[in-house]
Image 1 (cartoon, each protein chain N blue to C red):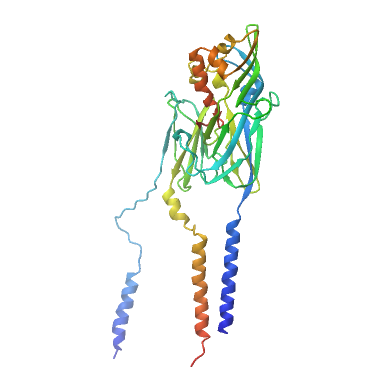
Image 2: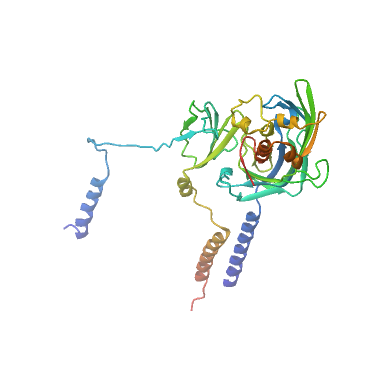
Length: 149
Length: 266
């Protein structure tokens, strides 16, 4: 006579085996997507005249010293580029022509940067966590070293 | 046994806290240098919008409260607001510098340097243009000395400005990015002065905003006597036309820049 418990175990094991995923060949669909952000610059003099042909330099937040991209505005003073969203932070775009120039700073992906970076604990928070951790060890050590009645 | 464990725990915790405090008190530092630049307009001279060839012997400017800032978000001078920096470093003296010093190929004038500056990007700067208390520009914030020539005529001029201005400026705009201090390194920031704003520039289209707002040199030539012009603002107000004097008053605050970058003048 089969042990009662095996009446439950065997079906359970069989279900587990059948539940393991395998490749399903069916008429499904798969969609991959990426989000690309384009920044459009429109540069003009104080008079409103477009800075056609102005020199453009783009600086990424992870390397503020060296240009990430250089280019030229079109005749209408417009310039577009797609920043690398894996580099969150402040992107700086400098436009210059004929002794006139300006620079604009655009924050990109700040939310992503905050979520990804974590950390930033204050000294007080670190001390409190350290105290809790150390006391945990102390308490455990004291428990096991107590004198038994 | 319990006493030993307690003592050990307290010791470990104390060492940990001390280490953290030690780490928090330090930080990467470098040096930040401050420069004043009259550009080639001052060093090499230029032709004014009305055809006068101007060369400068001296351009004395007196600067105070020179401060560089790390700002985040970056300061916008167009906002007209005060600069709020996360880090500030500055020079604590009053400096009279000669922007024409050193000749035609001279470098910008080094005003001062701050050591042990926290590392980071100093993307804003402010300064005051004040009256000098001593020296060659005593009593004036700006003294422009030089010679202007046109059609065989020559005028030696000495124009003295006693107006005081304050500048709050954004990031330097130029061939390279400035103000990025790295650990153990040095960076510079620059106060730039555009004197083509006063006299205009013959190499710029006459309908350009620069020339439209500039006084030119002709009004100054018109009040010179015997080939010489030695005036302060009060004398200019008395001798220039009301329109020309007002143009001068309106244009003087626009001298201050950071490269081609803008400043808010107050």
